Image: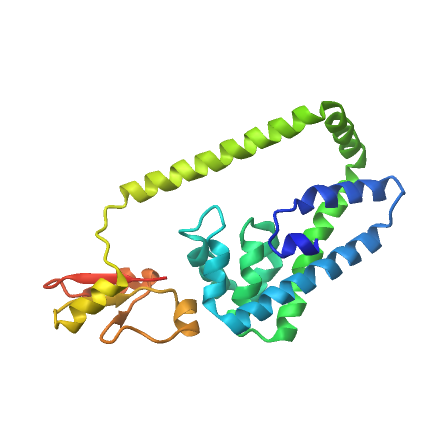
Length: 249
C-alpha cells in the first residue's frame, strides 16, 4: 500500500482482494487489515502533500507526464479538485492516475495539513475497505481464481502482458490521432518573447486553470486571464483584429 501510493506501479487491489479472502477463510483479521492499509497509505500521501506544498504546481505536471493521459491529466485533476476541494481526496484513489496527483495538488493548494490528513485517511479507509470487504464476501470465488491462476502459470502472465500492451497501444494511437487532428499553429515562449520585445501588437490570453493561476499568479505582461471554462461568456474580450496567442500549462 505504501509503495503503491508513492506512485510505483505495484497492483495493490489484487493484494487487498487476496487479503480480504484470507480474512473470509479465518486466516487473517479484517479489522487489522483495514487499519494496516490506512496506516500504510497515509504516510506516502503525506509525503506527496509536503512535496507539492514546497515545490509547487511543477510537481503535479511532472507526475502527470508518466500518466496515460498526459495532455489532460493536470487539467482534469485541477478541475475536480477546484470543484470538490478536500472531498475529492475521498474518491481520488478509485480513479487511476489521480490517486498520485491529488495529494501534491492539495499541498499546492495550501490545504491545512490536519484537513488533508482527515480526508486522505477517509479516502484510504473507503478504498482499502471496499476491496478488503469484497474479498471477504467473495472469498470462495477469489480462491477459485487463485487456483486457476496457479494452474495457468506463465500463460496467465503472458495473457496479462498482451492485454496491457494492447491497452497501452490503443491509448497511444488515440493520443497520436488527437494531436494530428489538432490543427493549431504553435509558437515557442522564446519566439513570443522576441516578437513582443519587437513591439508587435499581439493579443496574449492566459487560459490556465484557476488552481494554476492561484499557485503561480504571475502573468505575461499585457495578457488577459480567461479560463477555458469562461471562454463562452468572455470571448468578446479577445480581439479579432490581430494575432492571438493562447497559453496554459
